[in-house]
Image (cartoon, rainbow, N blue to C red; front, side, top):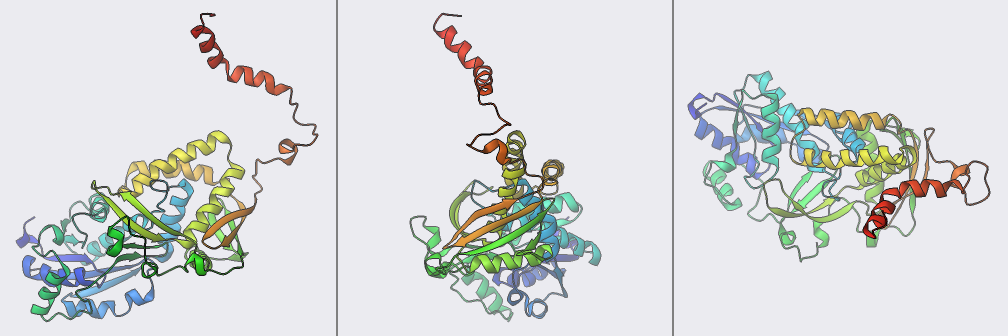
Length: 405
């Protein structure tokens, strides 16, 4: 499809400098109608306030703001938690999990308004371009994808500001933007500024969601999480929806400086990047969930679930949500999750989230078996035969090496 064949484009619109410039750029270069689309994934009301009016002033014909908060938490975050996915052992996938539901909603708007193209403001260096376009390909391969950062000749904030000024398009952006941030119900990420040098310690101005652990209360706080078949259903015995439960955990965890992370990660496109993440509620939730898993799943089951989590972390990070592999991994994880019912108490103190209590009707822990005292259920003399059989291969090899077998 050539530029002249594009009639209507749905743009993933945030109201920031990039997407504000994209609207007039699309109209000039594709001679098309631009429909703005914004997803509410829990980034905060201040991010959405006045967004529709701003899009129209920038040249959009209309603006669709879609509330995805409950679906994001219930249908994307909770299933990912069930797999135990943590990218490269640290990153809790906050940005990665949000992209497929945003892309799906964008496609739905495009089909609703009769658009023939989709547009995003992702750069050519990042992961998000792959995540969005991978979703577009799976959900609406007939729609053309436009990625301005791979087409236009603008390279800096100054270029974008000058472009908007020439066209009298209003913007509140300035030439100086220290950090690039992305927020949703699960986390907020920070890149840029001093973070571009991995030797520089993050300054206090990097963090916006959590209290500095050094300034957190000197008194620990305990929070109780209730699970039913792998899904969080209550916080401190209060029944809450998926989104509201996460909001409450975020508030409690942030006050104690929980969930800060400073990492260098491998981007899908081949380069390394350094980012700081704040995921207070997610850190608490993951700790509690894993505590229940250790109580309920046997050794082999837990080992296999860990393998699923490793694979799923790369799947989500790499933007392959709408694939048969995702369905298969989730099916396995959800089979285990049926047993994850119970309560966990997590102690929060100076940036740490420590599980201190756990219980489940499906617990495999038996005090009768685990006790160091006298018991009638475990004959310790039986261990000798087990160990001889368990180590038989090593014994045979050793004897062979010594020429005795």
